[in-house]
Image (cartoon, rainbow, N blue to C red):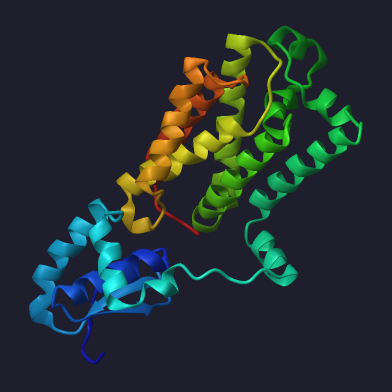
Length: 283
């Protein structure tokens, strides 16, 4: 595209392609390009006279990138298949994916290992990670127990649900903002949600759900605060998770839910998103 000018750039490919397809559907000659920069996925215009109109569309897009009209434009252009292509499973792909998100992978494998050991009758990890009241911790100095409940699970459904969300959202944050950001969010959301749940219902609970809701809050609010960063959750998914949170408080489910941990985790993640949005993003 000769003499083209860059309109906007994103940290992920999908929003850049969606916007370029939408611009094309509106008679503006636009093209997606990968560039060597922090925001590597860019949209370029071929005609300078389109710039003012295109910028208005781009600003509207960044405010609500999940609007159905953008995906509709991609479908009409016949290019949406590339956006949702799934790589075939292979051991090499799995190892590459784990290496690309080492902290996300570490927590996933740690939770899985502890759960498998417990089902083999080896309950020592549960005993070492079970949270205790502060007067006990002040005596034995086993402060890791504040994070401990996040690593233990009590049923297959429990661990599968939590780890699927942890993997999906955790690797987004780790790959875009770095391992240290995900580690900090994990520590904050796990410790505060666990302590809050301890104060409300006692020490007999476990699960990564408080951290998962921390990730949900973080990704959800980053989608609002910094849509150009390409971190977001579809509105139906957000709605489902918020409804699930409310249903937990209604006490109509056959299982006990750590509702306080979920709520505190969501608040932690939302505040963490605000903090991330106020500092320069580094990868």
